[in-house]
Image 1 (spheres, one colour):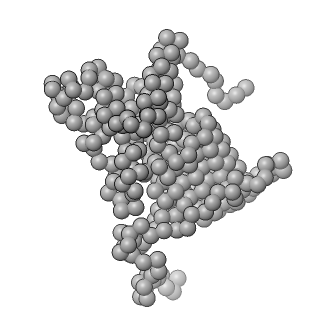
Image 2 (image 1 turned 180 degrees about the horizontal axis):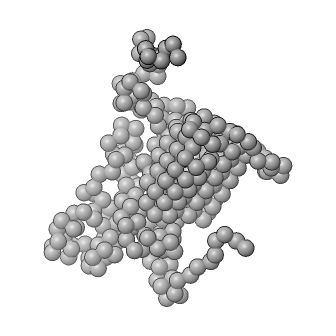
Image 3 (image 1 turned 60 degrees about the vertical axis):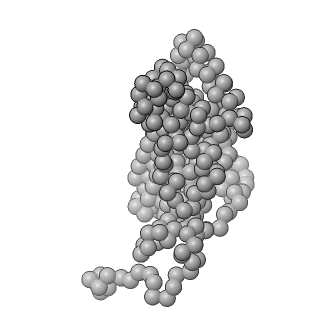
Length: 294
């Protein structure tokens, strides 16, 4: 018996949802469309059942709160964020976040369908049948690459500012954080962007953390609460903080080459010109005095 059972909603409701998503995708495909106006108008209709201009007359603060042009997202404060690329995806990230808090976003059927429709217009690359649950966060969105049948559960952070690639059939459990940038231990503005690669068929289980620059090989499994700060080989099972590969799955028929080996590697980058690619002499860390003899 399969783990997941098929579920449906009423045919009329499903048809209405599909029609709305089809129209939304058609409008977003038009390069001339104003995505900011589109998002504020749709949110006004969904949340307040009236046109945006009418809402602005009777409840100006409610209207202000809906318009992505009046909102700032965290990535806009990063020196590494490309302003032009982020301007294009920002209203859709705002739409995604706002709808997550509505009944439409909380319902699995409609919520997954809405995010699936928005994904191709936000991410750098998206394969077939992505499945996102509610309250998933991204840094910029435009540096995220997804294969087919990727599943991302609730309250995950996919930090893609340095580049994040996820292969086919990978599953990311609730409350997982995956990073693609690091801060220097002595100077927080000294940031390094590091591409993170997650192979195909990977399982990253709940409350795990994957640090920037790590490659997780195909079919690997990351145990609950693990802190992954080094590469994990294909088929490896990594546990602990920091994570160590304790055993490997026996997979004699896994297709070759491994997906994670085919991804073009992006070199580490320093987005802040105030900090060079080298550490000046006398600039680093040392062992605390009380631990030197231990």
